[in-house]
Image (cartoon, rainbow, N blue to C red; front, side):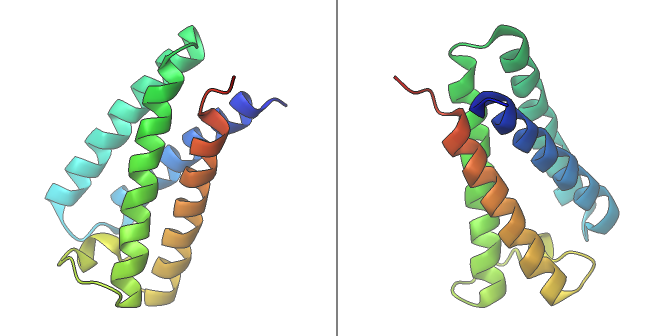
Length: 121
């Protein structure tokens, strides 16, 4: 399996897990709507990349970098390193330890997808 296919698999996995977590455990309807909208646009970008390839990798890597940043902010919020006021957005099933594991796994997967999808010379 080449790096691009593995990266696309990670992106799809991240999008599916984020969408399911948003639908199952979101504390707020507005947050769920925003999360699903971002996931939908990222899924369309990923689909275009799969079909066309080329420069679309930068767009998908950009989405993954954004998801990486979001989950790192969530880790920082849950760890008490900073306060964003979005703690409800980062809690999964109202369980602190599950939320920390979720944020760590998602940040790692998104960051690794960026690494795999960035074009190389």
